[in-house]
Image: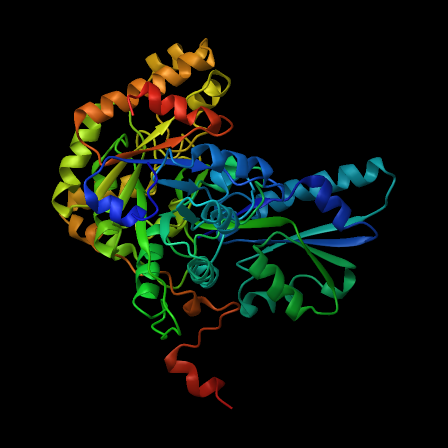
Length: 293
Length: 226
């Protein structure tokens, strides 16, 4: 599956159905578990997305985990959040990432600090995800955001996120258009449950030729109260699915995720999927199998 | 206007401890309008302090005075026509923090303590309700956002919003709060100016809001130039 002769960027343009999965950096310095997960997913995915303090929970910086991903022969997609760093630090980190071989960057606004474990932290948001994409593009063209020339410039494959389940959708579409305009070549969506919503979204971006990678979350019963109360920003799980998951065992949850993959693949709307299963990364191969991949 | 809120009583009582003669100085402008530090609020605070200190058998003399506003030397300089500031150990000011500081500058030989926490620049939505509307960023974008401030109302201060977390038009941070960018979209759509939202807005220029800032009106530049 993971043909390192073909990069993630090449795979994006090849027309193949892409498979990506996400990886949480450790909360600490112990990378043993992370290395194990990478090992299990090598050969199963085209790329591994590495979160940046997901849901504002403090974890190791993603560039270090991306380096480990590369060392193990898998291609990383580094998430970069605008929440924790100003424009100086963001550009510095992008250059550092490029210097160790990280090419794929997913630019995100970042979940608000209130969701995390450092609620008194100052949300930075010096720039937003559109500015960050633009900055990354500028760096790859040889200049920083302020127009200063660089000595050595990175080569990035830039991505962003989008939420086809947003209601109202129109403001989201305006934002997505901007992300594409400034250089996003792929979009990773928040989990989608309604194919009509996904179709409406894909129809809007189709002309731009941006690649759409559908987000798939493994929904688990212990998190159902949090799915309901909005503790997962951007995740809007329909009530009927919450009820199905609430009393389910993990095999059922894997099947539910697999069924979503089947539905998305058969709708023929997306260019790939991006699976998120924090704490259950070892089940990702089973989820893919349940999804017919 | 500036909106402020009275500090917790125990904090105020602690800050005046040791003083035997206190002047509570109110402000008749913003903080009076938001029912935090005007003449009535000064009277209430004075009564509370007197009662609390008497319960502790402390013999403290408390006087009350409210002036037009404390952010203007013109009014501060008139205080001594009503009272003799030197008769007091301490001035408890119920102005906003700007007024407290100017008062401290003018009476720099006196202990001046704040009775309020200054909270925001805002408007009255109705009697007793004020909402924050402005963060004084020195780079106003309201022309592009239909009169709705993304710096103030958006939890992430996005200039190109919304983020992906808005749920049914509400902010991911608080389901009671409207998403700023959904509000902006609706307003611009109503005005036929959605093109403003479709433009990419450049990053904030923090250099224009160096703190602390001084503004000298051009008509007065000669007066202040050495």
